[in-house]
Amino acid sequence: MIIPVILAGGSGTRLWPLSREQYPKQLLSLVDEKTMLQNTVLRLMSFPKVHAPMVICNDDHRFMVAEQLRAIGVSTAAIVLEPMGRNTAPALAVAAIKALEGGDDPVLMVLPADHNIEEVKALHQSIELGLGLCEKGYLITFGIVPQAPETGYGYIRKGKFISPETDSSAVAIAEFVEKPDMETARKYVASGNYCWNSGMFMFKASRVLGELERFVPDIVAACRAAVSKGRKDLDFFRLDKEAFAVCPSNSIDYAVMEKTDQGAMIPLSAGWNDLGSWDALWQVGGKDENGNVIHGDVLTHEVKHSYLHAETRMIAAVGLENHVVVETADAVLIAPRDRVQDVKRIVTQLKTVMREEASIHKKVYRPWGSYEGIDLSSNFQVKRITVKPGARLSLQKHFHRAEHWVVVRGTAIVTKGEKEFVLKEDESTYIPLGVVHRLENPGKIDLELIEVQSGSYLGEDDIVRFEDVYGR
Image (tube, rainbow, N blue to C red; front, side, top):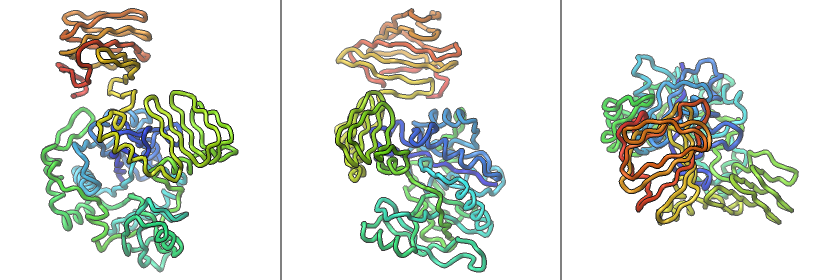
């Protein structure tokens, strides 16, 4: 029995401005029509011994994760919500504790939610090999056979073959090494003795928990407390915030895999890419006759070997070579392909001056749908609001703003004070400051409306909720 453990935290800052804290790369469609999270789950579902996955994610992303899994028809064993990030060792301690609750001792197949793997059959063959080793007590990591020297990955040095009498490619782990400089990376690749550290693992739940207790007992103690004091919330399991907050931050590599005498590596050649930069997306993307990867409304003249992505407007490019241009509704990134690792420095600058472009898009997703800013001034704001069929916002009021709603598509049920009434297309209503109100969509299609806010303060935190089906 295999339980996939999908690690869906992280903010993907190197793929800014498309990936942001509130809508990171694992929730985006970067390679095909499905998101990175959806593809990660689906590539395991055809393996015959796989059960429902466990997803570990940020509390802020919970409804988007649940909706994306629902959209592909996948039910989960659990969606575990971390109140704050504590790296992979605590996440996997929690996963093992939860997996052992039912009395079984499953194999945990640990996958980050933001990797791309082109050859699923090769992955399945490696999982089959890993299963046998897990039953013997080994803790498995998957090492990517490098195609070229890379300075953006950690490396693992191969030890002796685990079973030299068979055709098994599994080897002992001789050493983990940090991200090298280019000269060292070339030596590693030329030697044939190193693989990239993929961050993918396999082990029985009891084995990894036992090794965690052996090497980092403080992490396990904090995680046991966070699980025991945690609570069910709709379709999610919330770890206890106070208990998890005292848990040390550590990776499973440092905490266990570098110390255990039962570690093993399975070299994997499966078209793997962690899509950690815009250059990585250029490498895996479908290219035109000039070597360009193009998404959206893009016109080019004498442009070569570039990545051009348009979200809301036309991009026109002339004479570029080896460049990245990414356009969104509120930001444009332009960089040479060999400098895209420095995008995270732009994100750091944005955070330093507390600009919201670091964390949110103009279109913000909520469990009931989404809203998008259209115009903003000192005392008014205009938004386009979309409410999914059957969804409704919280019963709420505001202290500093009034709202005017105009329905442009669908039908709305509006609660305003003591009244409840229906609004249809081309109809409107006014919500005075301080009046309790709610909006819901009783129909079968999306409800779309324009909201005009006016008042002395227009921040999203000017809200008092009296009732909310989403538990916020």
